[in-house]
Length: 328
Image (cartoon, rainbow, N blue to C red; front, side):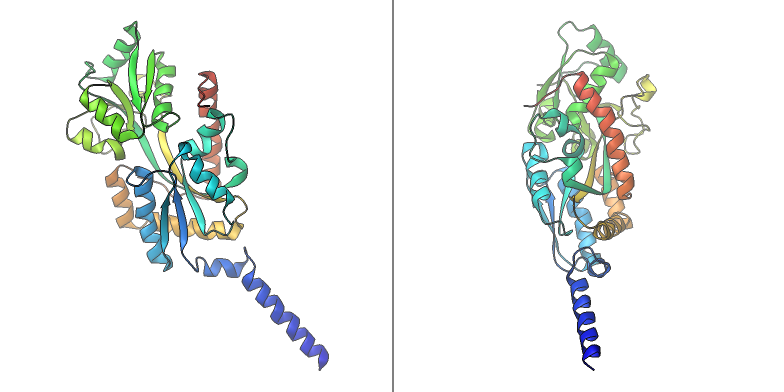
């Protein structure tokens, strides 16, 4: 009788331990059982913020738990990334991470407060924001070919704006500069909106911008789209050629925004996160809302996202080193 009681006690204790232990099958079945904190390393109102709030609303409705978006801008996304890296690895803190967070920062900065390869775990690529070369009234060229020819012929070179030093917008223009052999000078801004305002106002002739940030300026005729840094033309801008069509197939650039979690998050919790977030992205209403905003929805596996980070790192980190771009 004592032996049976002992066996039952051990079994009960084991079941309680399994229920409480992070990373178990039980934990995945119940995940999330409380609110999830979703850190966005940009101010409210931008593309990354819109992406998180749109997907988060659908995810929260599916999971029957609040998804709380927490904006933590600064440090070229390093502030939000560091906070995520230090968070408990239980799936209840996630981060919107873009090219800057995962690919550019490690080579742009000699000293970084986090290590993306060691501190952060890929969950899924949520969306792509393809880059578009736009011109304002200060730029006389009406086409991308004319702009490239004029920039090559200019002794002084051409100034361009960006959403900030080290941003995808900045490095997309540096890629064009390298591939086309142009003389360009960078004027960084604190966000795409003020840079676009100066392009539209004639203070800066050109910049690279994503459609999510630039759609209003383009539709309003305040800036002219000259070419898209994408493999194919954008459905929203069917008359705007790709750089590949202009003989520059290497000029492909997009802001890639994915979800990551702290590195030691259990594999089955990452699987649960991936399944739920991808399901939210694939909701027809959510997908259409993202497309209308200018985002190309994705929603892939952690392995596919990791492979993309690796291939993009090889390409962009070489460019950054070759051009000796640093932000320290």
